[in-house]
Length: 96
Length: 493
Image (cartoon, rainbow over all chains, first blue to last red):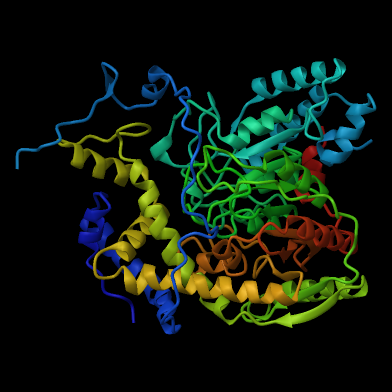
């Protein structure tokens, strides 16, 4: 059985503006993919720890020394909009 | 005389040091090959002809002056376009990064520069490395040089095609679920995924951070080893980089397989595998046996769930990694009355369908109420797969299987069916989940004249043994065929 999902909510969480037609199409496709992905639930895994990362390591520290960083102008050169050394964006708070 | 574009790295290096070839001549030959074949293949997104010629001239001058940087000195190579190159556009084949010029180099790019390599260009890929055919590129499909009606595999299809046709002597790709090995198999070249953490991922545009690893494409196993040696080793800029010495890579290359124990992974070698692929794999295994290896069948039952686990873990990680593409710091920006509307519009406009599909899938798998049933369960299955591989390596030295269940498939055949496309990676995904190294070596052609790849897998940091067995596979297969486009009348003046 394809998995039923609230695709509009998922798209909103992912910050992707999709049309109703796109939502329907992606919803159907995701339902079919999740039907396959659900197979992982067939394996008994009680007491099995999760693997998040293939190399067992915890923290990776470097020496606490000051090193150079990229020049500000180089970093801002790729930005869609910049002003006075900052990234510029539309208003954060809307009318609503 | 052999066109220099068709030389191995080893042969080209010997010719340069014997004074029979310059890096400029070699680079010109490779660029000529690209100029002739690109209209058929579209392997490259960017060809840096001026930069390559300048680098080649500098390499020649250095060699004349006695400064030999090693086996990659003056060798023209190509880079998948998801590795940052300072001053050269880097798009990951996505509209959302159209025109983006990185302000810094990926660590592998700096290391290749220090090794004297000449970068000829940036190769096409499935957008953000998500795909198995290079059809998901926002900048057009790459074709397979063996048959332009078929796909080159993916996601590193451009790098595989470039090496197969002679538009580079070696290339680099990234492998998250098979994105180096599967296109290598489909294009008849060697492709290798190193142990997770052996190669720095700094400056690689991230897809799934617990799975991604950079590795080489080459026309021989030894060339692949040389390319890996140039980029392997600890990097302070990558928190997942393994500290300590780089394992010996070429030390046992020609030691053969006598006395080694080789396990055929049953679950990856039978159901769903094309009959001609199975026959070629069986024949290669017989060859290993004749060469003195002990061959046994190995069952890794959890592998059957690898694909399902992968298609939860990789999208989950991608949904987090690709959050950075929001129209603020780099790339495309669409109109929006508020920052949030701008971000949502930018992402809808900038990402292609497969990327959107995976972001949505990952967002769902990580969302409240579903996390444990999907992502958590996939991570526990990953543990089971790791344990089964580790147990197998208690008994055998290496594991083998096909690289891809089929040879190259027609352009368009799987494009509309995501699940059929995902199945292309069924044989390659398990070692991404375990973090182990693996390599694909071309061993035969099928009845359509398309190459078949043989996969060798080894335990983490077992690169020396991996290359040793791969070299033996290359020796016994004696695969010398070249892609149609690299040998046809297309190349005649």
